[in-house]
Length: 230
Ligand code: F6R
Image (tube, rainbow, N blue to C red):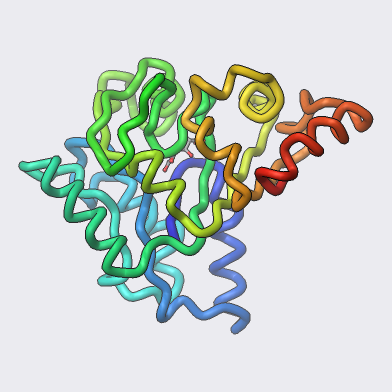
């Protein structure tokens, strides 16, 4: 599985924990690769994504520690760590299900909007918008790292199935822009996701508020259905 951090997947992680505790799921043979990590944060830093995953999922399910990977934000040689990360995913047979959230600017993982996305896992400079959005977890904006390591859009799109979850009124604009406003998606990390038939979008009513109304929706869906599952 490819896993994400952030507020969006938290209810899903709580549900996965509850289902394993109820005997309905078994994570003992599951392997997971996370999308991203802040550069410069140690794995046990309260805001590191490794720690987030431990506290919100891994510590509560039967997944084996050696079967969970998160990019190493402290690596001395980031490019070679990134290559090793890609190799590990490949050795494991690739990602079956990739879970994605989306940033307000359309980023997936930490792939910020741009014209040309690095395909593989790479270091990225964070935009001020993303740092602003994430400062709620830090005591001040100055403590938010300025760089991160993220799977590339190619790594993400290589997954056999992608489940994108978009929730909350603050994501209504970006959901509309990425999926329904022709031309916009070119600037978003998702531009590559939309044409893939293996993408499933799950959203709540608040995030869906700006989606076209029923009649228009049918037309929009017809256009998208051949490519993606929404
Ligand atoms: C985190 C990640 C990010 C988040 C995005 C939305 O691993 O990949 O792209 O999915 O920043 O974050 P939330 O869910 O907090 O709104």
